[in-house]
Every structure is written in structure tokens, then in C-alpha cells.
Image (cartoon, rainbow, N blue to C red; front, side, top):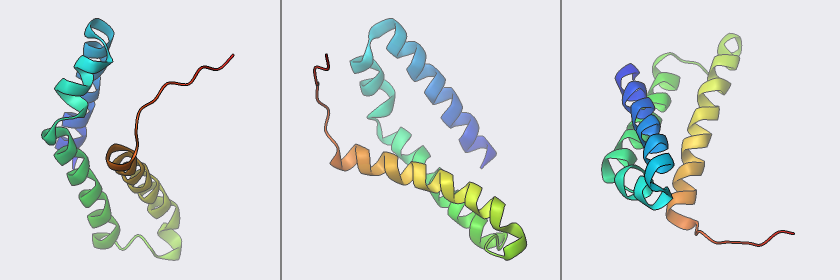
Length: 94
């Protein structure tokens, strides 16, 4: 799990620098739209669910820790929904 977080952090940092230097399209094509980035996010989600089950975090005294893990699972699920069912657009706001 720790190694996945390190890979994820380096990927996000690299994407930030790429986007700053070359634009959003380059960052999407090199990092965000790649299969390995999807795999990292998928494995992070699976590991978080596994931690909930293995450590039995649904007990009353461990509920805050369970909610913390569930929040990250919800963020990863939201990212997946946006990735596969969302679309990009431009809106002019005065």
C-alpha cells in the first residue's frame, strides 16, 4: 500500500510539472489517460477495501478510521465515474 502511494504521488507530481510546462493535453496523454495510472488507482481502491475487511474497521470503536478509508474509496469511485462517464466542455461565465 505504501509503495502504491509513493507511485501515485510521483505520478501526480510528474503530471503537474508536465501540465505546467507542456499543457493539459500532454499531461493527459502521458499520465492521466494511461492504463498504468488506472491500474494504480484501481489497486489503491482494492487495498483500501482490503484494509477495511482485514482490520475489521466497521466496529464501533474503529468507526472514525473506517470513515477515513471510506472517504478515499468514495474519491476514487468518483474519479472512475468521471473518467468513464464524464465529458469535457467549456462554459463562458460572465
